Image (cartoon, rainbow, N blue to C red):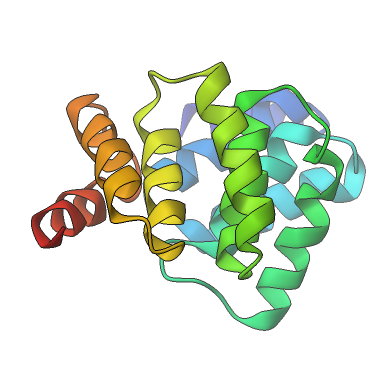
Length: 165
């Protein structure tokens, strides 16, 4: 409510709009978050955090429709050469979802190298190794993801996957 009221008072403030979109995302209101991120990117196509969060929402945990996947791939294309581990992770996750396994593995490895203590990044790399038929490395990274004690989208999938490895 606070962010919504702030946006009503300052409708051009992109920081408040981003905070409102993030609040909707965390509350599970994905459609509203998607609409707000799209609005932000319409006003500022180079807003990397909005592009990052929107791409993650578009691919979700279970994959996505072709148009969402295509949009997510376009959003993360500028992240290919970044050194930011969060953007590398999103780039890799979107490419994993798209079936571009080699690209995904390379990007996710780099993300883990730069920020090994983030459970969600470890989870994404573990799932990439699983898809690459490497259960040993998949288990190693999924264990690190779960051991991080961080809550992230996919933590339940990581726990369940570990039970089956």
